[in-house]
Amino acid sequence: MARIRDLAVRLAIMAAAVLMVVIGIRNGEARTVFEKAVNICLECIGIG
Amino acid sequence: MDKRKRVQALFAFTTNAHVQGFLQGKIYKGRLKNMCVPGLNCYSCPGALGACPIGAMQAAEGSTRYDISMYILGFLMFAGILFGRFICGWLCPFGWIQELLHKIPCRKVKVPPRVNSVLKWLKYGILLVFVILLPILTADEFGLSTPYFCKYICPAGTLEGGIPLLLMNRPLRNAIGFLFSWKMGILLLVILAAVFVFRPFCRYLCPLGAFYSLFNPVSFYRYRVDADKCTKCGKCAKACKMDITPYQTPNSMECIRCGECIKACPAKAIRNGVSSASPHESTVTEPPKPV
Image (cartoon, rainbow over all chains, first blue to last red):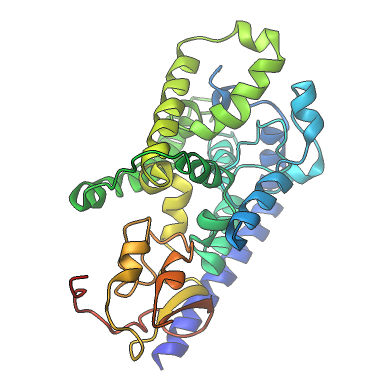
């Protein structure tokens, strides 16, 4: 029983993660990530 | 070279395969940068093909459109529930760099258990404060904020992005100021510490490791201890460079799944793999016998 419960929890987390990724893509977050990642991040390299 | 070392090297080179970026002092701008890599790898590294999840999370939080990034959180949860900190041990370029530094022959330092047990919580504070709270709470009237972890702490950005880009770009070199000196100081401290201590950044400072560690006890990929085979000899704990006692807590939040405990176990009592078995399968709780 505990084994089934643990598996169910893990599958639920995985399903929630997939759902969040889909919602994020629909909200245009992948675009935001892309825009940030294709420009040199001055903060990251210690300039800005 | 063992299998893990080969995978670490392969993954580091594959995710930083934009070689011409190093030669030209420019970063990759292709569509792959829509996606994150699972490990800590600065997206301003000239070779980087993907986005850094910690940088991307702060970028989304600091944008005008969102407060929290469902896309990045979902990605990290997905990777975390599948693999936990296996990603740290096998797929993180900055973790690999620290391991290479630790190979420099010299007297190694073992962090005292009491110090270790306190310092290990620092990375959770950095995740909460620098990666999540500050970028959300300090947004200006336009909703924009600073990526605090990247700007003030991340040594991977300085090493993988800052140094190669500054070497190839005079305009960027002319813009160097106190912040760069600060970040170089942190990088040098981490490099020095990594020579003496195994993966100090991963153990005490990395917010990505902190996030994945939350999933270690429940992830599909896990370690299990066969209580019937285990003799509690403590050889696994001696072999563990992250200072865990694997036969007691095989799915400890600090375990990076390097597999040294599996190799060290004379009874072959520790197993790894993807399993639906309970994370609390190990029932051995007594302290080890003196060796």
